[in-house]
Length: 217
Image 1 (cartoon, rainbow, N blue to C red):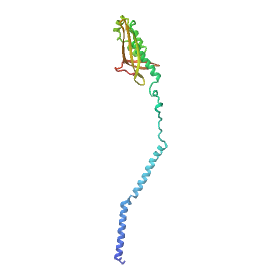
Image 2 (cartoon, rainbow, N blue to C red):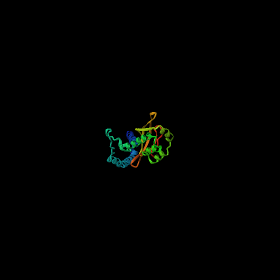
Image 3 (cartoon, helix red, strand yellow):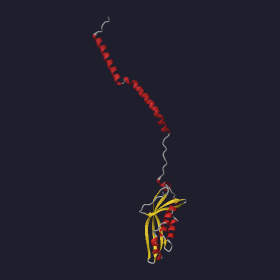
Image 4 (cartoon, rainbow, N blue to C red):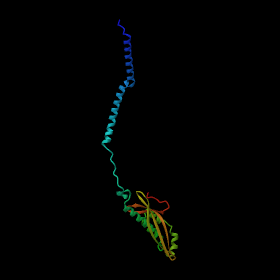
């Protein structure tokens, strides 16, 4: 039989075993079983990093291209509009000419001559509308007896609106009438819609400025 250890030796061995068991328990609780998982997580991070790196590298390889900007003193307003300055001017001249014709009346002539002068500035459809108008007929005979003559004057005040096909102007129109009783005038603001008709501008609609105005569609 083996000889039993003395009591002191037994206590020492027991103490060493206890310390070893405690140390092993601490090792397990802190990270002993995480070895494989940590390694797998590290591998996953590496794989994920490999998946992300190409995109990151690509974004770094192709940086954003800043758009060009224009200083305020170099901005060209006409570049933002659907028409050139010459086209705006031509359309305004048409609107102004129509308003002058509207205010010009020679009562020694038939009413048709009056409407024909306005029709010269109008689209074909609107010219037909003018030709069918009878608004001046009732007054025409009375004014003819007085040998009245009216001079039309007009001035473009502003652009009310525009789109790709039409421009609406606000025009101040005046009609100065002279007859045996003296001179008097009628004055008003009108909204005149102009549209491109071939290489010319034509009036598409004519209304008091405070009324609705048709567009070019």
